[in-house]
Amino acid sequence: MIPSPPEPPPIASFEHAAKWYGHVIGLVDATVKIGPGVTGLLGPNGAGKSTFLKLLTGQLQPSQGEVRLLGVDPFAKPSVHAQVGFLPEQDAFYEEMSGRAFVRFLAGLQGCPRARADEAIERVGLASAGNRKIRTYSKGMRQRVKLAQAIAHDPRVLVLDEPLTGMDPVARRQMIDLMRDFERRGATVIVSSHILHEVEAMTDRVILLYQGRVRAVGTREEIRGLLDRHPHQIRVRSPRPRDLARVLLDLPGVVGVRLDDGSVHVDTSDPEAVYDRLPACVLEEGLPVDGIEAEDMGLDAIFGYLVTK
Amino acid sequence: MTLRGFLLLWGHAASRALRGRRGLALLFLAALPVVLAWIQVQHGRHLSETAFVAVTLMFVFQFVVPVAGLFLGVAVLGDEIEGRTITYLFTRPIPRPLVFLASYLGAVSAFAPLLAIAVGAMAHIFGTRVPVTGRDAVASAGIAVAGFVVYTAIFATLRLYFQRALFIGFIFGFIVEGAISKLPESGISSWSVWHHLALLEVRLFDGRLPGQHLRHLLQSIAPDETVAGSVAVLATVLAVALVIGMLQIRAQETRLANAST
Image 1 (cartoon, rainbow over the protein chains, first blue to last red):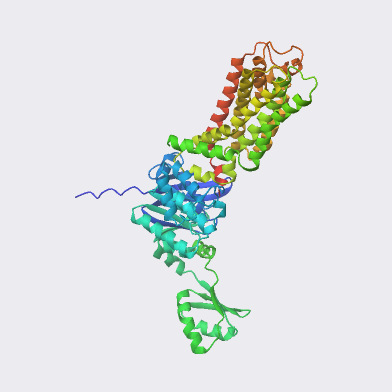
Image 2 (image 1 turned 30 degrees about the vertical axis):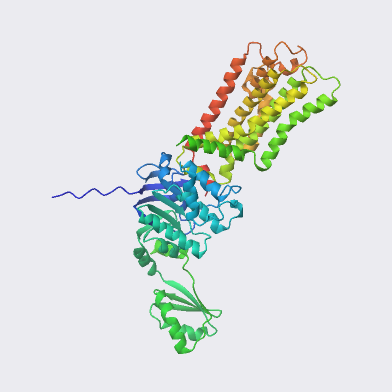
């Protein structure tokens, strides 16, 4: 019998890792392994995403347990950062510098020549604004310059903390394409977000964090499956809410309705069915509808459900 | 970690040290002894032969040097921590102690030339009325720079322990040091940085200062205290402050990282 080849070591791993700041819990008993490709870190604000990424990038030392990045303790071995690019969440810069000078300086600390920094500036679409001072940049441009300093040295591991914040749709698309490009080249991208559809657009692999704990690790479909069993609330505004409520109760998956000030609040276990069939029903019955919106798709509500299910 | 990275950090810290309001304040501070010397020389009818030494001891060493050390020391990594740009530096392949050291050297190298020029100019102005040689000017400038280098290291390290290091540094630099230097009988005065700067300056003018004039200022200096001893004390204080700072920044991550949360 031929023994199977040993499993390659993970790019990053957390082994019962915990972090607390005095009495405040940052992360509790996290055990995960992260391999090549794009992995999304999903959770509402305060879930522990930033703590997770700070532990991963060696800015913090775990209070308990172990964190490994490329096989070493990133806090004790800063040399690992030669292979890691990090985009921090906070909007912090040397404001008096130009974008180009900023990226050149930080790339220089990685041992990169200026030409590589200039390439990164071009790659994120800041070539024409590269010589302007950062203090004159828009929010989206500031995100791009942060990205440029993270990718200038062509890292094996790219860690991005809320990278899409403040970006317009075109820039978001470019950012996602860039991540995919890194993935194709065999790199590992770990990206955090508190917005579900953002993570869905970026990756198939998701780590769910809530209240400092890893709640689920899996593919996008697995996570979606968990979330879809959660009863959603949809609010439909109409000048004839009673008539509308009667129609809505006949739709599949609808488990209850509530009337409130010209609106119908629908509880459903199958929100897609409501969105799909509502227009046809409305047309058939001749009911006017002013607007439809999801009421509790906020991650807090979803995670609250996951925790209590 | 490359030498290039270290030098880049050094240059980065030096270029930021004298920016903005702090830069203006430090330029003003460096100009003060020159202006004071000019006023004394222009308007002082009976200028004492010890005027240069007295101003150096009582104004440059006791005010300009610790204030400059305080302002720049607390900014060594304080600016990066408060501006939350420390995250960029701590996610590079450079050990944190070297980030601290390069930033310290940058801050020191930005102001030290200005301080030396200011003391030199002050000596030149006094030299038109009282006996001050070129060697005195260079040596006094060197002593002032040495004091500045030591104070900056102390305050840079204090900043890693205390968020309100400016206030604590002020208490240390002016109240504690001032009180210590006025306790000659107990021998405690030799625990102050100022004491050793004063000793070096007085030994520089040994035999050339009229006996009575500075006696009340210098009574704390014992006859058996030597230049080599004071240099050794200052070098030790400098080394200890920097080593403590480097160990502190390596070990205590929470406060620094929380600043960027």
